[in-house]
Image (cartoon, rainbow, N blue to C red):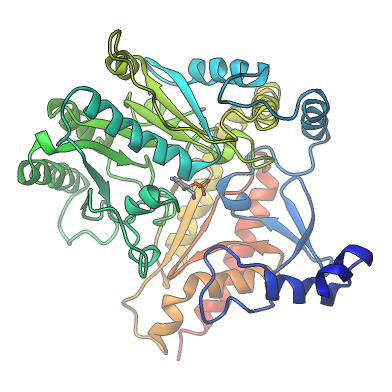
Length: 461
Ligand code: PMP
């Protein structure tokens, strides 16, 4: 059979394509194409570059999936991982701990704002979000407030693919044909782009804060457990809420005894030039922070939910103790934790945060220049090393269908020139490895501009 062949022979390129098509169900695959055989196969990677199975080289525009902070192919990372595998590859979190988990928990506690000092390790971002949301349930049940359960989330937010994390995800197409928890209420889009004409950013912020207040008034604060928000809605199209929004929504939550969860799965670990963005970029100290991705630079899976002292103390019960029945076989996995520690060490030794702070203004300048130059571009936005180009949908055109696929079309022309982007409908997003140099940043934007020239030419007719 195929599987026996796979064990006995070195597979050919055609074998791999066939086996992948016939036996590998990809995430986010479409039912009309999940047997397709044109997935790019990445064979090697180094720095900010990837090589596919034909030997073609690409700049990794999306940085994996917003996660490859220190870049690919680090020998020192490989050594740190190998050392931990040889010494002690697994410790049962049911009854034991490990040195890497203890050291990493303390390191993260030092990096996080305020009294966020307790770290619960998970397997990735979705399980970190689930853990945060379950912690809210545990907390309110513990306090004898079983009705305080509703979760406020936002349209276009993305929080993951497990049941509860996908339930708080506000991207409609992510939830068709799946059922969602009925505990969630969504706030309307916070994107300043597309706000009604004549509405200033200040007015927009007032409206968005009012949306939250209205929802709380409608549902009753006594029924609402928490608000979950990404500092920047990344998968929603790198949406940066208006200035002041984060602080004001946190104040509203505090005034109504609603816990605030900041989902920093993308913004954590340097993407905006700081370990975490909540406090240092947006001036808030949330009750919980979730992170993953950049924590290990994508070398191994790991996530974390970081909890405030206030919350931990409130859940403690000297009498009638209960077990916090939440955990994973791979909670605090020693090898993943060792990878995270090495990642943090590399980021510190090489001043990656300083590097991001130095390169980001140039990155953002080049992005804004695209917005000025191309008619087909309706909006460009971003912060740190995060960017998004959104195609206008209000031009006379040959085909609206083509515009709605703008992201995929721009990605296709850029890939020909050696740059990979991440398409989302009429948007293309990018978040390159944080080690990208100024020259490589220029190369990336030069290719994007050449790609946009090509697409623009198609709009003249
Ligand atoms: N939260 C946010 C903000 C994310 O962007 C993601 C992943 N893109 C997740 C949670 C889920 O993380 P994971 O895919 O590691 O489960």
